[in-house]
Length: 315
Image (tube, rainbow, N blue to C red):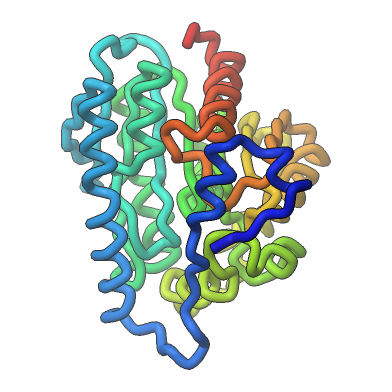
């Protein structure tokens, strides 16, 4: 349970106050060993909780979810009743700490509903069954297939948390291989550095909904034998130039990943890349996927407007 002082409740919505008061801090004590069996239990519990929420979003948004395979990588095409058939498309890379989550995640469903753009969401293999760079290469293959599928239509690459880190790594790899790059990037609460570096992983350790130390321990299932500072794992350390797509990022003052947004924003600006960073008062990691939370709705609308600016589409 999070106790808020009056000065804190004064600057967030009543809905956020209620959610913060109801949060139970999630942590795994250091003496509990992270095993594939434990990860599977966490994954199963997470998916069982998300399934009814996702089903509700599909029903409320009158969405159609169509399985597809691009270059032997599976995913979903998510469309609304008024989908725009000839304009831009969104490539979504789901979050979930690299160990959980599916292509049907809330962010993908909300994007399809609120933008009416088709969302192609990739179902990459999860850790520890797969690790970096295999997962990055899977998403890159899916991206190649999407380019072939949609032709010259603009592609916006979108990711949440771990998915944002994968997205940035994919773009860096795509540039190195001479592929057409996305027209824009949307990165919600991005995990761009999973080496443990960053101020917010320390000062927000017990202010976010979950422990940064726990998240880093779980991320080792994805890192494997790789150097945590390798760009394929932590794209914060990759080389970027003015070729990098215009990028929208969001975070909150309680987010353990806040430093990722601060640092990557500066990295992109130094490379003359257009970047918009939205930092929401009192918000936690992953707040953006809450369907009706005012701060989340405003953040998503800002992201959709950013897309509009860069693909010339009326959303």
